[in-house]
Length: 109
Length: 116
Image 1 (cartoon, one colour):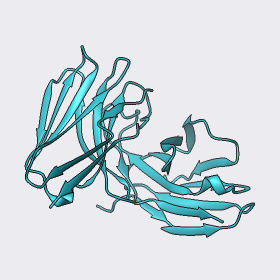
Image 2 (cartoon, helix red, strand yellow):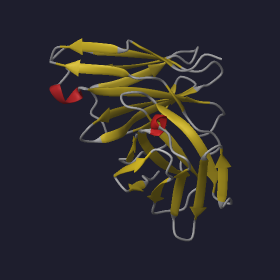
Image 3 (cartoon, rainbow over the protein chains, first blue to last red):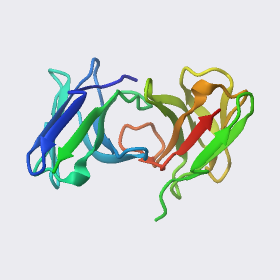
Image 4 (cartoon, rainbow over the protein chains, first blue to last red):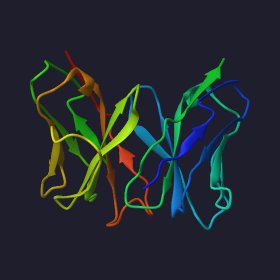
């Protein structure tokens, strides 16, 4: 199993703007998952993109995957205050998920 | 359907004591994974149980142990508590029979353990 590395570590944007977070990983994967964690709470599964997919949408979320570059991005459009949270990517190639440090997103009013 | 339930929500223990945390997965889920989250180390994988068997284990000392019952409920135990064990302990359940190859995890709200 491997760990994803999210970039940037922290991001502050104005409400209504789009937020983009990136994830890099090192070895081949079966799928890549994104999770959100509000302060002091459990993680919430946002989206899963398989290795043979390039893009996936879910509401205001858009995830891309480039297996040749071993990278993924999560775009949140029209951000809201409730999007303030930490976001984790999880590249899955084995039988467990190893999480990175995440990106802390802060939506400014 | 009910989510993943972790009890207790908060816990304060003294160094040297032991503690048991409980996790009830989503009905029908047989896989339960445990994670420790601290500000310094982030989210670290402890272990995973599937059908009452430990299937994976992270790099934690033997003071950390777990088990899973026939109804898939899981407990983790930490003996001889140290100050550094203060953390948010999260459990996650997953459907299916394999690892996270096809499904995401559903997490509980966690147990906040403070060791004084």
